[in-house]
Structures are given as structure tokens and as C-alpha cells.
Image (cartoon, rainbow, N blue to C red; front, side, top):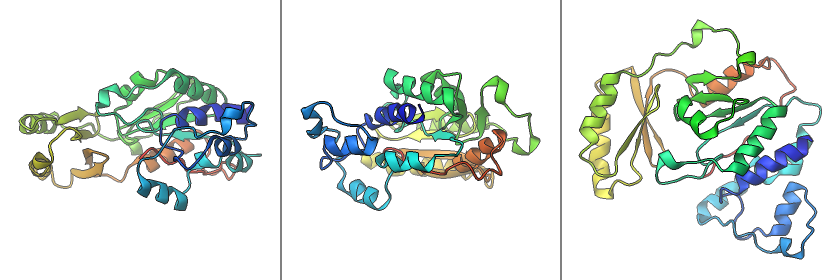
Length: 273
């Protein structure tokens, strides 16, 4: 049951078109997932190619847990499984319009099945509400804004602890950022409640420098309060506190009662490039 549930999830994630390069054929895919091919065509190239040769080389040195399904499952024997997932590029493909990063039905079904058997959390840079609107699963824990906004199934939420309190963003900062960047075509400012994402995937190369200068100038008005970070075609303004997705993961393990446990395997899951 454990293996079958995770196989469904891993197969769904594999369909995001990033895991297996053109040099990996169907027989190797079956071997990695522990599946015996029933059709002779299963051994043909699967077509889920990686265009980026650099990323393929990087994966060879830093293998994803998804490329080693059988060894991964062997590590879980006798241990409690807790699942942590990203959203963009993991449960949904990377898309040009962040508002259209929809989750497929097979992916949703796979995550639902895993969450029914194991504590499962989605930790994203997006706002918690936006991730929930995409996923629509009540069995899952959600950590939005890089883990600064966390919610779980009602029966399992730990009582509030004030040491984790974080204030939401200043509306003035968001408004100023939108006003000053609206003249740069292709800019999308996304309010993630505890952080702001400025997407520049559709910004012309010659305009990017001006956009970054504007963002840096706005952030400089809030010294020691906010800072600027970079993502994939996105600049993010975050509160200057020691808190990120890793801290959210530790907090959730504590919430679930595993903070001192030696029976939880830590097996990294790399996201889509």
C-alpha cells in the first residue's frame, strides 16, 4: 500500500516533463519505479526530455529521490513517513502565467491518496490561500509565503505559539511597488500576504535593469524590515526574519510530534528546474 501510493504520486510528478532526459528509456523508468513492463512498447523512449544539458549534468551529481524510487522506499521501512512538497514546478508545471499554474486531476488524486495515509504538507512561496485554491484538498497542511502562513487539518493543528508570530506586509509597500512598476510591460506583482513576488518572465531584457532598480529602491525605504531575494524569473520581497521553507518544515515536524524523532527519513525531493 505504501509503495503503491507513492508510485502514483511519483508518476504524476514525473509527468511535469522534467525528470527523465532523452537518454532514459522506458525500461529504466520501469526499473526505477519497480514496475515490470507488460507491453513491449514500454521500453521505448518516453519522450519526457530535458532540454537543459546543464541540469542533466547537475542531476547526475545531485540525484533526485524520484529517480531512485526503490532505494527510497527501502529507507522508509520501519519509519514514519512525512511528506513535504513544493507547489510550482512540483505539483504543477512551471508556466508563463502564475495564475494558470493549475494542478492536474491525476496529481490531485495522487496527493490525496498519499495524504490519507501520511502527514502531507505543501510549502510554497505563494500565499497559503492561493495554493489551497489550486490544490483544493482539506487533508493537506499548507505553508504559504515561504512558510510564514501555516494551516493544517483542524483536528491536528497544534495550539498557537506566539514565538512564531509574523506580521503581514505593509499595504503601502505593495501599493508603491505596483505604482512604480506598472509602466514596465510584462511586470506582474503578486501579493502573497507575507511576501511580494514580482514576476518578470514577460519583461523585455532591456527593461529588466530598470525594474530591478525600482524594486531595490522601494525595498531600501524599509531597512532591516524587508529584503530582496531571487527565484526563477521572479524577484521576491520578504520580511527580514530568520524564517524560510526549511524553518516551516521544522515547525511542522514539531507540530506533528516528530521534532525529536529518529524514525523519520529525510529524503530530499528536488523541484523542477
